Length: 84
Image (cartoon, rainbow, N blue to C red; front, side, top):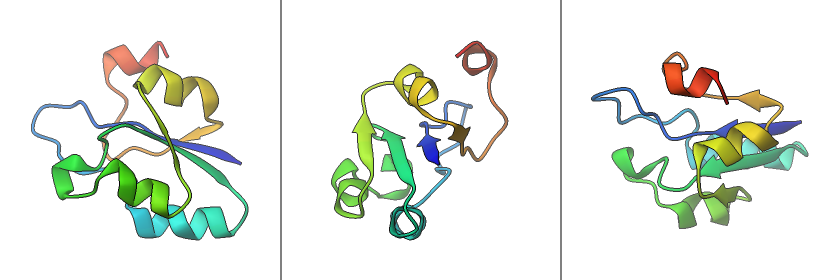
């Protein structure tokens, strides 16, 4: 499965849908994970942390939504995301 993790855009939401340890587990099971750049910065995870466990980094949420078969978020999709 192709899984996407966009950066949360809701006001005052700093969490991320998947931390690197979760990405590592999914990648080890054969899944492909795409993470939007800086998605984990609010909780101290860099793009390099995600790359190190097998994720691919994409520049925009639109790119993540376009590639993924399943999206993992903390909060509900915001209005702008629903059209992606």
